[in-house]
Amino acid sequence: MKILLLFLLLSYSTTYSDKISIINVRELFIKSVKDESSCKKLIDLLANHNETNNQTLAGYKACASMIMGSHAFNPMTKYAYFKEGKILLEKAIKADKENIELCFLRFTIQSNIPHLLGYNQAMVNDKRMLLASVPTMKDLHLKQMIISYFQKSTHLSLTEKKILYGK
Image 1 (cartoon, rainbow, N blue to C red):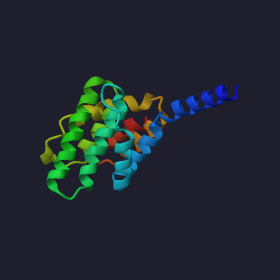
Image 2: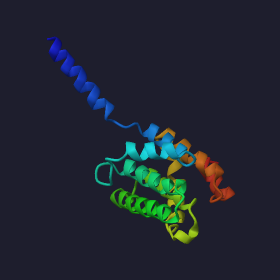
Image 3: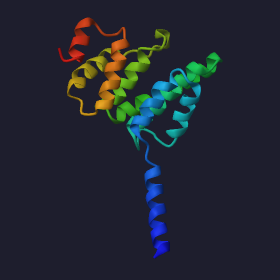
Image 4: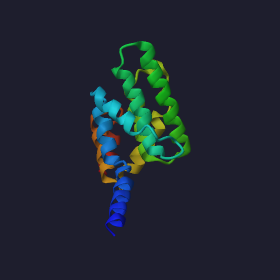
């Protein structure tokens, strides 16, 4: 009986320890912009995720890769991280076109990278989709994350900010 109980307890802890908290991923994502170790931790945490098994987590992994480029010194390394992340993010979005979180991630990346990289084509559509979705979002943590980002963004007009706040 004790062996059975121990087995069940171990099975339970293994099953639930493998699950990744999206809130923890989001917080690491925010920290990764300024902290290289958080960026590496996020990449390691999401190593097994791709566009076929979890599009949202694959999107975060893709963005972490692009952000890792900002922590690199060598321009070739910076570009390699960017290119790898861009490909993965676009695959994740292609697999789940209606995923608001992925659109938000792409918008944050595209609004913060140099225009000479040529990765800014979706900004207008992503912004439009985000503005239409935020007022009715059920995920309050994500909603607050988007609103907080847009408050600091120079990519929203005063009218768009009023839409965002439901005014």
